[in-house]
Image (cartoon, protein in one colour):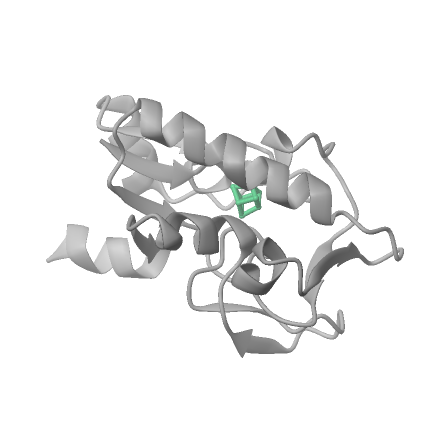
Length: 153
Ligand code: SF4
């Protein structure tokens, strides 16, 4: 079974209430080959919600307590992000997911790049909180561009 970020399969769970639908991925859900998760919603955050970024590191640092996730209004949402990551991990374990396709650049789901914490649109190499937790547990984490390359091969 494959896991996929819920916004990539058309669920309106993005911070702005929209989604990032990729039809090739949605197809996998319809065929029963994949399950979707949105760690931020699982962590109790509402939709829409203010955008958030990691300040002081990346997902691993947040899990270790050395960095925080803060929204654009200055609210600390670290707890919700960490809780959401663990709930998402539990869920995908139940479905025996070994490969997961996560939305790039997100402070939860980014697996190659994330925004740098300044809310200026600048990205840095790194991964989000959920991506970090999944990688820690040996899951194969890829982003939407990587999976589409594989599917289209
Ligand atoms: S990137 Fe991840 S946390 Fe953000 S809306 Fe998509 S599934 Fe949810």
